[in-house]
Image (tube, rainbow, N blue to C red):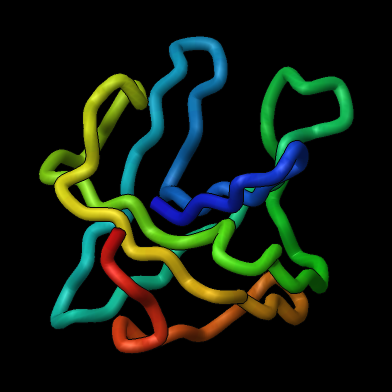
Length: 103
């Protein structure tokens, strides 16, 4: 799951169920992953697909890796990888594992 620690932070996951507070992860395959990006909607009741441009705040974004497909966020990730910055153009960004640091 991708995270951005800001008040209107991006969330990267297969799906997000705000009512049940469940997040479904995207599976890493052959060391790669493509993660759909979401942004909280203006009413704060759900998320909208993120397709914009954005540069994340320094050291405030990264990946949470879980050993399960779905989490209610009370579960601890098995590893957290933080990126210095992530640059999104038209909702897409590319990073390598080496760009991050394990926290």
